[in-house]
Amino acid sequence: GGLLCLWNNSVFEVDSRVKGSNFLMLAGRWIKDDQRIYIVNIYAPCDLQGKRALWEELRQLRISHTDGLWCFLGDFNSIRSQEERIGTSQRMGNSSDISEFNNWISDMELQEIKSYGSRFTWFRPNGSVKSRLDRCLVSEQWLSHWPDSSQHVIPRDFSDHCPILLKTNMVDWGPKPFRVLDWWLKNKEYQTLVKESWTRDQQAGWGGFVLKKKLRNLKSSLKQWSREFGDVKFKKVQQLRQQLKDIDNIAC
Image 1 (cartoon, rainbow, N blue to C red):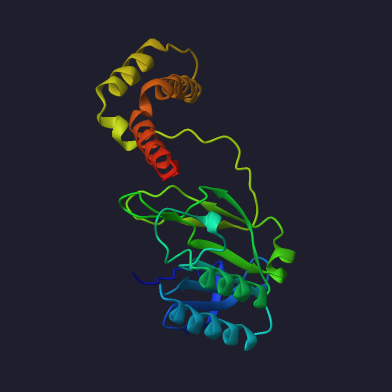
Image 2: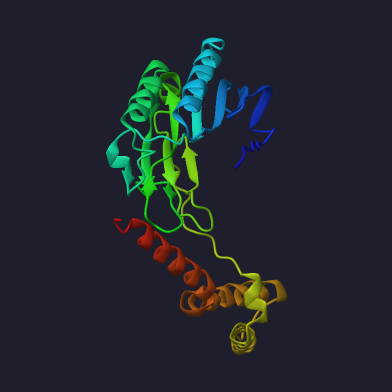
């Protein structure tokens, strides 16, 4: 495993970076809100001794930077309670591990934000164990500025970990816009529909008006067709993802 950080310079103006053995920290200005923030990407070791060293290193890191909003996220390789693990592995459910992780969170004055999606974020390939190892933890100042912050556990595909999406606010983007998918162009049903719809739709008037009306009516026909046939591949992908999610949710 490893760590990688990517960011958009027009959104997040990074002015400082710190690299540790099990973390990467980015510090800078969140341009839209003119806020100084610290993002710490974590990949904690599996052994308790290694975690203790990491927790202490992160304590010192925060002590040395007293300003700004903090977010610690990634694979902590620890759970906060026995309810966050199902299966036979004892390594993740060690009481000392749980206690020291919770104490570190408390000492750092971090908050766990509201979570949506699966209860678990890591699954052993054979399905015998599943745990909540990945999470987002933020400072009180972060929550004061972005009180609607939430973390969304996204269904996994090939990895044994689920991706987590951090949102600072809930946005309603409105209705999904209509789009013609590239693979439709090779679909014979699509080609036939376009030809028949265009030929059948007879309009009178000047050229620009006729073109506008024909395109509008063609769009209406395509939207109806896409609901029944055009999203077949997308629906298949969604079905497979749902099946994988259902398997993950089966209690071990």
